[in-house]
Image 1: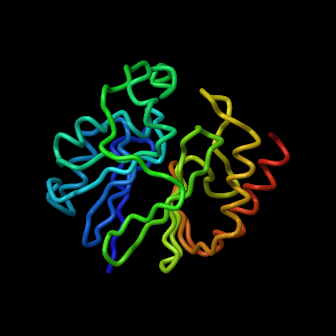
Image 2 (image 1 turned 180 degrees about the vertical axis):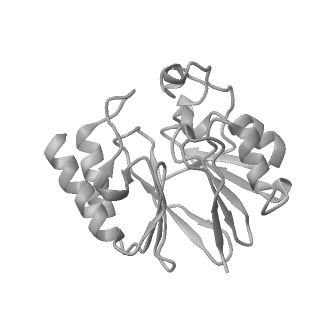
Length: 213
């Protein structure tokens, strides 16, 4: 049975998720890797983690990636349109956090429709720009699970579009795609994990996006 654990290092981090399947992976890296590593060690030897999948390059999701890669030996994966932003203080909005963007290159590039086989789960890559040009969501159709990055959040909330290369129209289109999914559990990039009425909450996100963007 697949386990998912939220292992974020601090309240200011984007959410970091540890997926325990035949191939253990991290979704995002947060900013503060040491407390994240301590939480990971409660569940698994970090060196068994094979991939760190970044939903996008923003610093609160990628700032800890160098240390986590060092500790795990995992491959860093990101959408091809986002890879060039890594290490750029402006594109990763690291300047907002008063920190430099870490210098790192992705080990592999993701594209729309790619499937990441973890064993029991196969994560489908959905390119969902708007919050950032190469933002992605990860969907597991059998488990009806969605890792939504900063595209949508619980209770009808949405990712902001006023950061580097954000786009209102793209975000609306991306959320429209998400409303067509059958989702029972939402693992957002911020806020709490939700289950049960996820489809209704994503519909609320779409109505909100259309009303304010």
